[in-house]
Length: 422
Image 1: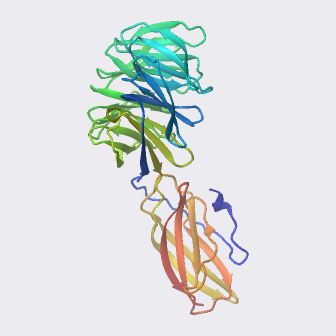
Image 2: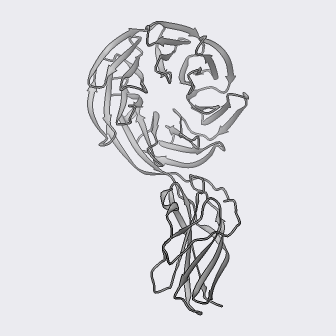
Image 3: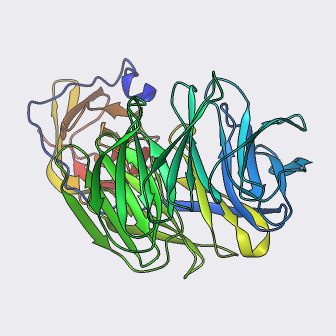
């Protein structure tokens, strides 16, 4: 936080008194800055962001098209036809190349966002469902409703098939590209070794699984019956969070702090704190969402939901919550010695942590009829500080203010006053 490193003015010097405290953790309170909706093609089913986040690509299952949405203006800039019956979309991480799966005919299509389908690869199996691309952009993995996982080598174009059973759908590739995790709609999470292309493990979860997202050593799986399954991929331990609703998909914040779940039962985007699995907020939407894609520019987050029943896509700005005010004063002592007035302050930690870790506090003073001094700062969890100045006298009453600081900015403040004594 840059302003925490600023020095106070020459008239007001900051010194820290030894002593640290721990801020009491509280529930997170992420909220939305509003919903904006744009019409796309018929029955949108999935979306993906371009590598730099300037475009959102949306596949429309019934119209056989790809809508290109400018994320800045949030308008459809072009529509690419000839995609059969598209079911999913993904982009390379190193180039703005788009891949689309088509159920019928069963194909993997390469699309130039400028407006053309550049190549088509026929896929074996019954009906391609969803796809994921390896972090190195070397392979594409496609689930097939007939019970298979397909591996397409992007260098040779060769396709391998692995039986995984049970109408597989959602899938994710580990950040190092070593494993592919497949959600079997009959209730299993399956781990596939990408190098050997063989099943290496399986967890039995519950029926009607709808989505998967990875963060560090945990796989988070959503269900149509309102559960989130947190699977520790190292220990194998499964924790179930029963929340209720009809979760169509799941996305995880970059730092693992939240799960974002489109809930078609309540027409909302539900935000769940992790790892506790507790509700933070439920953002009501105009239409029932079908899937979600999340971008995180800076400290704000932007969620895009595809709304299949209304043929639209929505954008929501999710602003992180600031910390609450310190809960009380421990010391407010203002005294004068010679020409120097000193305020020795100590306060209690806030009861509400906000969305980010505490980085420190800012505090200041003023005469009731005067101007506030410049902010002074502590670092970390220090909850004490000293302000000094000249020109004050015994009997002067001073207003005091202290606020918590996090990456989200300066939070709510605690006010107080003290009278200068000897």
